Amino acid sequence: MSVRLDDLDRKILAELQRDATQSLDDIAKEVGSSKTPVWNRVRKMREAGVIGPTTVLLDPDALGLEACFFVLIRTSEHEAEWQQKFLATLRARPEVLEAHRLAGEIDYILKVRVENARAYDVFYQALISEVRIFNVTALLSMEEIKFTTQLPVK
Amino acid sequence: MSVRLDDLDRKILAELQRDATQSLDDIAKEVGSSKTPVWNRVRKMREAGVIGPTTVLLDPDALGLEACFFVLIRTSEHEAEWQQKFLATLRARPEVLEAHRLAGEIDYILKVRVENARAYDVFYQALISEVRIFNVTALLSMEEIKFTTQLPVK
DNA sequence: GATGAAAACGGCTGTGG
DNA sequence: CCACAGCCGTTTTCATC
Figure 1 (tube, chains in turn red, brown, blue, cyan):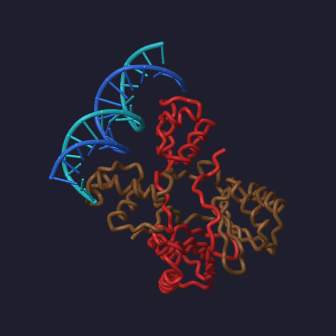
Figure 2: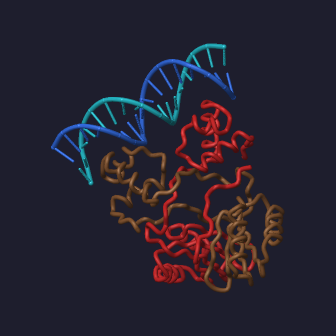
Figure 3: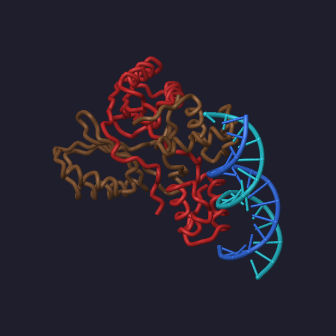
């Protein structure tokens, strides 16, 4: 069951994505409305799950997480049981920030943030010891050109 | 110039990542401290850039963004001028959520969120018309297995 | 939906240990 | 560096137009 979002909703979402610490008054002013309707819409969109968690974005380098890998995975196993274990492993590992099942020759892609290349190898060894994997290619990021969690709402 | 983070700092960061709407009192209770030290540490970490923007995570499907692509790019051009234009293009495009320059055979990877395959093609055509690119492979996500912005802080 | 009021709450500051 | 306390802005609810 989806939710219809009008233009005002989308403007509010854009503001919340930009800075979720803004007061309702500020948002209302920005989107050309007033406090109450903005508040009601935000509440409804939260209940509907359009708006998920409020969070802070941290600087990975400040945490010592200086290496980012994209991991391309091919597997020969496609049984339900294998997949269950694979997914559970990925979800349990905090260094795996993203995981997608893909269409085409490559079966999965992961985004992994770790301290350094050695820490990636530890992760890699742990992964292939837990689940059978046919082929793995790791792409090392040299530079994060762009990173945003702001989805285009227009 | 980096910042030294002690155990308490990291606990606070974990809580803020989990839910940035929590009150200072709640966080203080959770990390075994009290309001004032938590507040001072948060302020300092903000100033130091360890803590970046506060934002909300939206449901892409609710916004009609049902297609996610990872785009692998090879190029033959490595001059500064070409790169400048390429980066500017990526940064200007809101459907590009992430872009990394890579080590190895593949030069760049993009994460792109769009409405559907047709919208991706529009993006793709626009991209290759703006900058010269040698080879592009698009990986289509069938299922988002995991997505988190929470970096491991321990 | 807009406006305004009122209550509870939390961010933020200052003083003192 | 932490505890306590007070002020002020904001959230949240409610009543009215």
